[in-house]
Image (cartoon, rainbow, N blue to C red; front, side, top):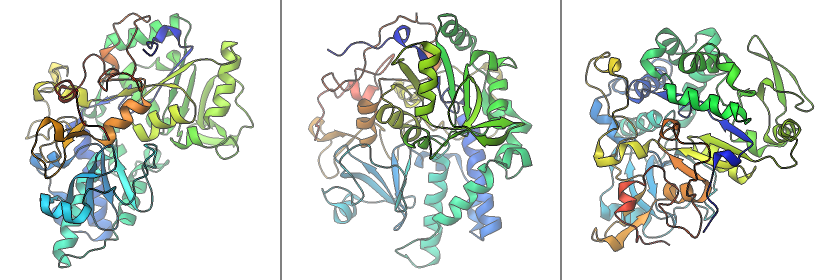
Length: 452
């Protein structure tokens, strides 16, 4: 059996910010992200005005783990062996016979058997976090619109416009310039989009600090947005909790790039200053790389190989690169574990939120998609839905390969003692071992799945 994982044995505890330490009110934030992109496409690029109207039912299309083939406008869900389990053209799901004709039982053309294959390329885009997912719905509806306009065209060239929409809303200066739709709206009413950290999480962070752990915050958000989030969720003295804060970290490059490719930069009034030849002391920084950070951590701990654990929500940006390039322990924040129990979202939202923003609401993005089925397993198309025809998804395989453990939220472990021993994922344990407090129901109910 693999050694259990224990926070007490870690010297350094690092956190991603968005959707990790900071939890979002997903029905509100997803709609805001969708609108910020849709309005840009309609007003600046001349796309169909129908894109601006989105119904609560439309959100069922969103599911983490989908890939968009940028050439043909197909969305696909992959099995752990790279075959295609389900597919759609835009929002229109392919019937089993069309799926078989298009993809058969062979690996998807862009699949690389190592599960570390890139999540982004010029040919496809993987949707693996809640900032991305509203874009999946938007892109699917763009494909619908273009297919209708152009009599079923086979190739598509809309991605450059989507990238322009992302740039417009999320560029480094957007927060400061009040540019786009996203940042001005979150600034205006942060309580609508963000949940404050519960007292249990604040106490837990302080407990880690009191136990002598070095605390890191490593976020790809720029420093001004990072400060807004942290003040809202943790309070004005949040900076006292963290020894090192790294913003605009441009993950996964933070882990994969060499120091010369991605040096640290100092900050002055949220503006990046000169590049640093090395990282010599704790503080606030921008960009940077894991190699220079680890050298500083050696100095701070006095240990030749300090043990680091990193909490994050994105397999692409956080978990895979922290494990693969830096060999850190990794804790995946997987809200799908919340939406999976009996199909009911866990009731942990503050009561005063309920009913405050009236009107029909989208389902939270972590709940089960009727369109795409389980994030964790699926039946092989064309076979009867018996136990033997169920297989793990590619997303599920990556979780057990690159995460130490997976939890629905930090709150789920905040009241445990620091020396609590978690069962970790490992190659010789069951596929359900590393999920805390419970594995997904679909995995518990199907322990003997087919593996390829």
